[in-house]
Image: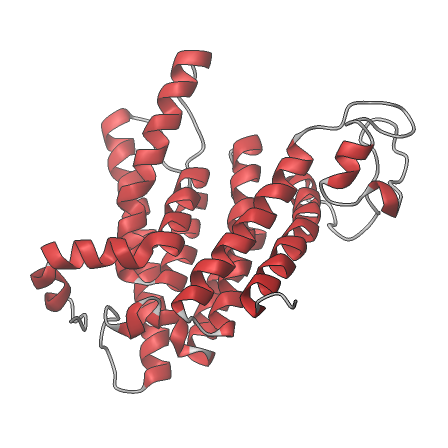
Length: 292
């Protein structure tokens, strides 16, 4: 009996996500050190021996090798299979949610790329307190261009009912919404950083977070990036309290929590925005949003 088409697609997305997760591990390790993500081929960080293809099968190789390098028996960090599994699961879940909503294929592909970028950025930020320009700046340019090519990107979700009406032309309006969302996202975090610096006499927000929020706003639009701005601190406070109690550390990266908030909007955004719209309808309409 043939698998249902959507189930087959989800299996493909899970497998593709696991493979990409292996590549993301390379990006997470090499980008902060300004190394090529293409060459040389993957090798053991302890003994430097190149990793054979059969020892580089996502998730499975870690289990088969017993979490140790085949040559020097050095332990392999559990980070590697975790990133692969996380990518695989998020790709499958994102695919299921967007396909169930009837989103176009172009929207699905762009959002999968977005999820991948969030994973790489989050783990780099956790390790180095850094959000590389190599991802955020090209990402911001790309989402504006793609919004013009695929106006449906700025209609996510709900058929564009919350898009801000700037011009009548659909493509130009999508580009305008992307730029407005980018400015709002970057502006909110930048203003927070300025006010935080005045209040605490030290840097409260890195400029990498500003560019990350610009990327999120450029893709998801004004209303979603505002929600990300308010939901992100909820994740940050929970994690921050845990780190403070266990390690006594006050300074934590913010990128992973913005990414968690963005994923929350990707998966449950329609329900959240409907709830918010029902309570703040005049604000939406004042800003030119088209609503029910």
